[in-house]
Each structure stands twice: as structure tokens, then as C-alpha cells.
Image 1 (tube, rainbow, N blue to C red):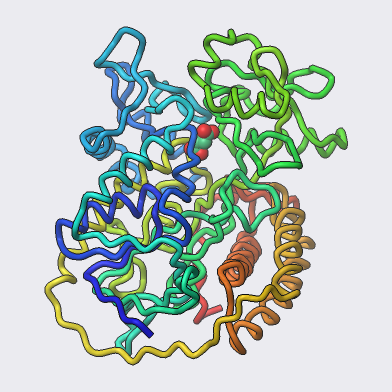
Image 2 (image 1 turned 60 degrees about the horizontal axis):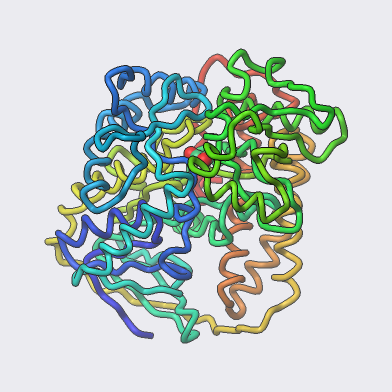
Length: 522
Ligand code: SIN
């Protein structure tokens, strides 16, 4: 087994991983691993933008308040305050790296600010409707210039390595091009693998979102927090033929109205903020209407805006819809909610430290307390850059130390043939999460899901122990672990709050508590 040593091992190449790698390269050597190509990340697909107070008519207090209201009582207020106050500094850094946010017409100085659900002001910096694409390209360009960063594409982390002192010392990593397993040894390991939308049948996420970091951290005993809060984006394009394509919330910010098939509006029944209510409210409202009417989709109507405006502000959405025969300046867009963002993840402190020594987590992979039970739109990329800075500063202390030798043990074989259990497992787990762990849950559904996930997990673990895997199998194993964590956390929560709704406990309890799970204490 090859042993690749560096000061930092950064796992994941979205905004969190790339930002940290760039900063960490000032401290020491960095191995950046990513399971496909560098660009294949959830960031690359992000449409909306980054929330940041940048005009006098807005205030930090308002951004903090909106975040906390959206989080339904579970935000860590101190963490929210720090994130909001640090935002302008971190945005300046992105701009200095070369990121171009859209500016107002005829103005070089003023950003064009977008509005999304739950925000009381326009405060979202964006690059048209391909903000993530712009950021990802700029950061990758910068990463490639750094001698201190070695990028390993097509490398998927399989399991983390703990030494005798229960300190994380790196990861076993599968190189899928050469079909071998390598040891990546590091003084500091940072997990930034994004979320796990692919655990669900319908998701806005790219295929890589399989919760690898959370599953690996869970297996070595890290605390995992609030996994029941899976946020469903209200408006993904309804088109069962293709991967779910997101119709940005910014469309509703520009006047998009939700309508039933018969043309009636309905959001006024659910919130005075109507289409711009927090995401959990809008997703549940759509879900409810679909159930009552036994329909498959609702419409999003932005035809009140001109073709000129739409092609300029939303060029990508305009084109993608056109490919499906929908001219959004004339036709209403059929939409459904789909799994979008994990508000929970690996529990971290204010510096990004997990409960395992020398192991950090950041971005969607982590649960930092800034999102609570329901993330405010466009706060997620902000969280990535804020925590990259924190991890960078905090991790300095681990670099100068000497560490004991580790005995590396990785004995499984690599089998690249596709086996039935893994093919049918994907179908089974994604159907089950969609029907039993979706927008509306019940005690009966949760218990049934727990039983079926338990059976699937023991079968997969047995195969995985006997011999080994291809990438698809590593991912399915992780998705099954993630589903188990969602169900355990959802069963623990005897109330409805934010993105978690249980018909048997439809109300919120007076006291807001986080759900922590740990493999050693379950
Ligand atoms: C969107 O553009 O609607 C997604 C933005 C986000 O999830 O923050």
C-alpha cells in the first residue's frame, strides 16, 4: 500500500474544501482528494448565491434575525452572529481571488442583490444564475497555481484512520483509476464532502452527494448532530426523465408565483409571506396540495417578467427549461420539491473541530449550529468560507507536533464487478427515504424505515467486510449509514420543527434541543 504523507488531508473539492486547501497551503503541504474531477461538487451546481450584508439599507441584525427565524429555535445564535459579521471580509477574499459577482446596470461599484425565501432584504450576491460555477472555476484556477497543494482526482476516501490515542491520522483512499487503496497520512484531516441528497430518490444534488464524510466520521465514533433536518427545495423541475434540475428560489424573489394545475394560487393559505416564506413552509405547502389533489406537480409562473429580463438574470434556467420545451417567459414551469440540503452533519465547535482529535469538518458535511432546523437560503456557501478561515487558523497548532507511528490495516480485496445486492440496494434505499423519511413523516413510517434500513445495512456490511468494492459500492454503503442516521435522529425527535415534520407530533415542543447520535452509544 502506498503511503502519501502531508500536513493536511482535505477531502472534497467544493467551496469549503477548495477554500481551506488554499489557506492551509500557507501553513504546510496539502493533499486534496476528490472522488471524481475537481469540478464535480455541489458548489459547481449552486445557482442562488451568497448572503452578505453589503448595503446601508440592510443590517447585520436583520441578517442574523432572518437566519434565526428560519432555523426554528435551533440556531446557535453566537455562531450565527459570527458568521454574519465575518461575511464581508470573506466575500472580499473571494473577489480578490477573481470571483465576479453580478453588478447593477451602469454601476461598477454596486452589486446586484437577489432576494430569496426567508430574507427580509435583498442581500444575495450572485453571478447570474450560475454562482457556484463561477466560484468553483476561479478557486480551481487558484488551486492549480499552488505548489504546496497536490490534487488527487478520482480518489474516494473509504474510511478514516484512528491511532491508538484515538486521534485521526488520515484516511484509506481508493484510487478508482488504478484500482488500488492508498494510505493518506496527515497531521490534520479536514472533511468537506458536502451533503447526501443522493440518499433520496429525487434530489437537486449532483450524484456525488452521498454523505461520505458523515458516514466515515460516524463509523469512527464522531458525534453526529441533527440528521433529521433534511431540507427539501420547493422547486425542482418536474421531469422524471432527467436528473432533477433546480429552479432557483431567486425566481420567486423576482415575482414567481406558485399555482395549482387549475391556475389557482395557494401560498396565501400557508404564510403571509406567501412564495417567500422559509423553505420548509413552502415545500410542505406544495407537498400538502399535491397529496390532497393527488397531483404530481404544481406550477411556478414567472411569465409576468419579460423574456429580456429572464434571459439576462436567469440564462441557465431559461436554457435548461427550453431544452425541455418550456419557454419560461411564456409557459409556467412544472415543479416539485426535492431533497436539497442537510442542515445536520458532523458536530463541530466554533473552530470546525469534531469530537475526534485532529479531525475537522466544514460546509454541508458539518453541523456548525448556523442553520438550526432549517437553513436560510444562500447561507450555505457563506458557512463554507467562514469555517475555512476558522479551520485554517485553528489547525496551525497541530502542525509542529511529532506523531507516533501507525500500523495501517486495510485487508479487503477490490472487486470491480457489479453485484446484485449493490444494484438493488440503491433502488431500495432511495425509494424508502423518499416515501418514509420525506417531507412528511409518521411514527409508523419511521419504524418501518428503521427495520428495512437495518436489514439492508447488515447485508451490505457483510459483503463489504468479506471482500471489497468499487466506488458505487463505497457510496451505497455510506448512503445506507446516512439513512440510518436520519431515521434514528427522526425517531428521537418527538415534535415537528423546521424541516422535520411528523404527523404524530405536529407541534413544536417549548424547549429546542439538538439531536446527537454516536455509534458507540446507540
Ligand atoms: C436556490 O438557488 O434556490 C438555492 C440556493 C440555496 O440553496 O441556498
